[in-house]
Amino acid sequence: MTDTRIPLAGVIGTPIAHSKSPRLHRHWLNTYGINGHYIPMEVRAEDLEQVLRTLPKMGFVGLNVTIPHKEKVLTLADQVTDRATLIGAANTLIFRPDGKIHADNTDGFGFMENLRRGAPSWDPASGPAAVLGAGGAARAVVSALLDAGVPEILLSNRTRVRAEQLRQDFGQRVRVIDWVQAGNILEEAALVVNTTSLGMLGKAELRVPLDGITSKSVVTDLVYNPLKTRLLQAAEAAGATTVDGLGMLIYQAVPGFERWFGVRPDVDEATRAAVLA
Image 1 (cartoon, rainbow, N blue to C red):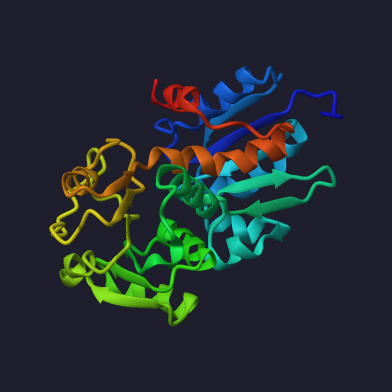
Image 2 (cartoon, rainbow, N blue to C red; image 1 turned 90 degrees about the vertical axis):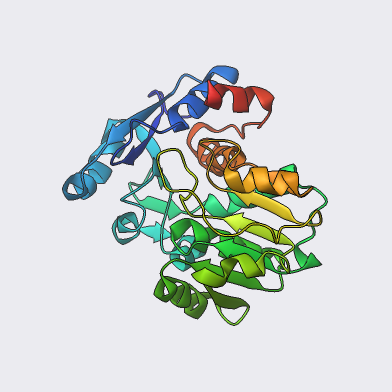
């Protein structure tokens, strides 16, 4: 770093105590011997703008952003990447030396890196992808899959109007399926992705019938607590290739860490162990 100040970064949201990002970044800071810090900060919506204007003056070089601020920060940033604009949310902020706030969304990058590492034989052109959910994470996933060359997205969400809005934003390669029919699309999907919170510890289970999953499928769940959700258990039993959601959390953090601290971190078993500790 050319600045003599200790670089600071962190994650903001409400709530924030559950975040695993501080463990991850502390591991990388220690691994590369960087004299910096990464701090979890609970920030209320009414304080968001003041916080974003103040932190750079305190030595902060950037932030991760989580619920409920990922949409609002787009209106406060000076520069927004095309992908963050398309997704409608940002998860990574860079505070530039000139005082400007740069907003990006690395969720799609993290999703694709995790998928490629966990299922290296998966070919985007091999067939449709079934995507469950139509929230912010789904928008990042759909954007990344379309960019990668997936021919069609079979999208199903409990509230159909949100799925229809996503189809309107991303075009005719997205086909909306009623939630009650979601189980029927799994058999024709080369890739199955759960972007909902269903199946997460403390949340309701994913009740979609899973018997359509075949041994030819690749199945991934963005939920990582538990690591092996009911969806992944069913996919494993069917002989499918499974990819857990922890890698997405890790890989989406790579670009931000590199921009803030000047080193592109490696993702290995020690990284996963540090996050799960």
